[in-house]
Amino acid sequence: MSRAAMIVFVCVLTCATVVLGDEVQLKNGDRLTGQIVQLTDGKLVLKSQLAGEITVNLSDIKTFSSDAPIEVHLKDGTVLHQPVTAGGPNEFAISVGEPLKPQSFELADVASINPPPKPEPKWTGSISGAVSSTHGNTKAEAVSASVSVARRSEKDRTTGGADYGKTQQRDRDTREDKTTEDWWRARAQYDYFFTKKFFGFMNGRYEKDAIADLDRRVVVGGGAGYQWIETDRSSFSTNLGLASLYEKYDVDPPAEDSNSQISLQAGYNFDHRITDTLRFVHDLTYYPSLEQFSDYYLTTTAQLRANLTKTMFADFRVIFNYDESPAPDQGSTDVKYLLGVGLSF
Image (cartoon, rainbow, N blue to C red; front, side, top):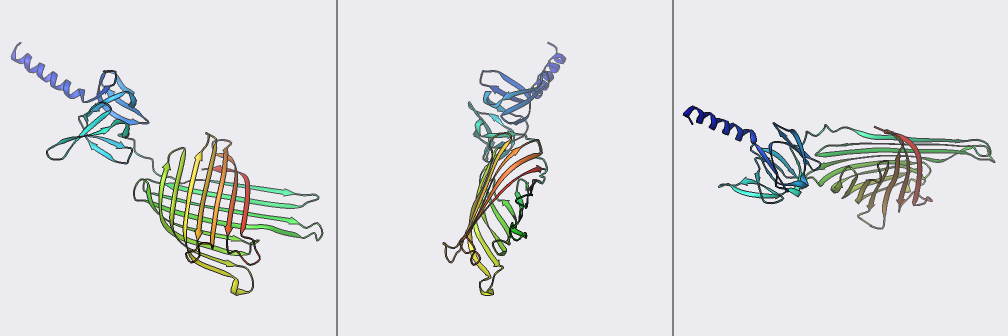
């Protein structure tokens, strides 16, 4: 072979080696070469010059390597951004330290590789309501409404909502309209995530109930929480902190018209999609007084939502409140039932 031919041959080999680039070794013994594009949802996409894009299940991969740095996201939140070398069965490795030493990772711990950019966080929410009117032997009118909003980014979460209900019924003897229900409440919470699971929070509530002689209840607090589960199907978090709770009653004598205390606050939020069209949401918050734990306020809401269309739904909601120190001559327990239809956005 002439010198010129030898040079050309060496150059071709060199170029071929460069083109081969990343390599994926399969458990059946096959080897695929090209460029690792990404891995999401347990499927790895490899781009080959000859075959184009090839999709391989992560469960079928023995190990893999890359010539250039790739972004590997592990399930514990760790992000690796460097070239990867082949490891043992069901493993891959990276070089760390001085001198360089290989560090192995399990393929089962990989969440994604070169994932697409996350979409900008957006506000989502829903609004629902119900109206009823009865005429004849009984004359009654009722209206209820609820609204909720949420925004989740990688570092924080903001949630808020409000509920309202009013009912009037005509007395058959006096023929006068009597209000039997007149209340509303609003709430908001901001969570900041220090890690993927651990977060700090600030929250507040404002409530009124004319029938329970509650002129206003104001709760402002903060603390820490832990996100145990957060998937497309389920979400569960718990929180613990302190709160300032103030209640003012519309009663006489004025000496009994208010209650103010510092309390603990402990609670949880649970959200689970039972089926593609049915969802269950439940939250609870408990406020025991620091001076006397037997004096407490508890509020909880349970909701069952059924999707009718992509944006329209029907929901049934139960709101339960218990106040150990209510307004004079009023009961401690309030239970409200809301049934309506709404739109999500």
